[in-house]
Image: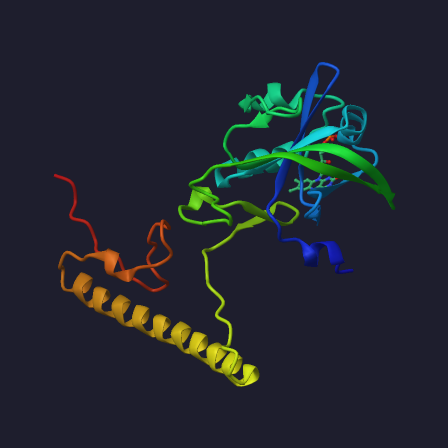
Length: 251
Ligand SMILES: Cc1cc2nc3c(=O)[nH]c(=O)nc-3n(C[C@H](O)[C@H](O)[C@H](O)COP(=O)(O)O)c2cc1C
């Protein structure tokens, strides 16, 4: 059965750290949410049997670390280990630094960090909702400035899709509002049509550029693939059917 939790997944994956009685622990979570702006409250849902539920329940503190793309494999690996049996910091050698308000360590290689004190624990089915009062927030300013900037590929948070699949946010797009004197349904439809046209046009331009390059390659000329554009920071890959030039044999 399709689960609502999978359909609703989409916020940045978090690594939640906590510290209790001499031991630190970390687990990846996808079920977290803002709950109140004033006071600032966030919720994390932890399955009742998890070691982290004990650690956070006892210490009444936790930190939410938002990992960058490069920690993808750490995230998945940490989700398969329990702090009840292994010291996850020892096995992964993840680097940490000291938080400002809580004992939970903060993880290097992340893009944002939210320190929380537990205000309430709400049992909900098989999970516990830990409601945390936000006591400090830190961000990497090259990745986040009042919103995710999504510039270089490694400055984008990961999103969990389920199993061992993830995605990264592609880039920033801006929504434009109809003016107060516009008929909203017409302006909104026009904007949708404009976007669709742009998508078609961009695809056609790219197909033309690829065709032109192919002719140059076939004629044995040196080509400049930068004119193909593509998503920023993503290495160019030959499109399907593109025949790369044959290199001369090494002397
Ligand atoms: C990407 C990802 C997201 C996860 N999200 C949650 C979550 O929201 N809540 C939860 O209880 N477990 C979640 N898990 C599972 C725990 O991270 C996993 O069971 C972990 O090993 C528990 O560690 P612990 O026993 O040290 O607490 C997730 C795992 C992965 C890989």
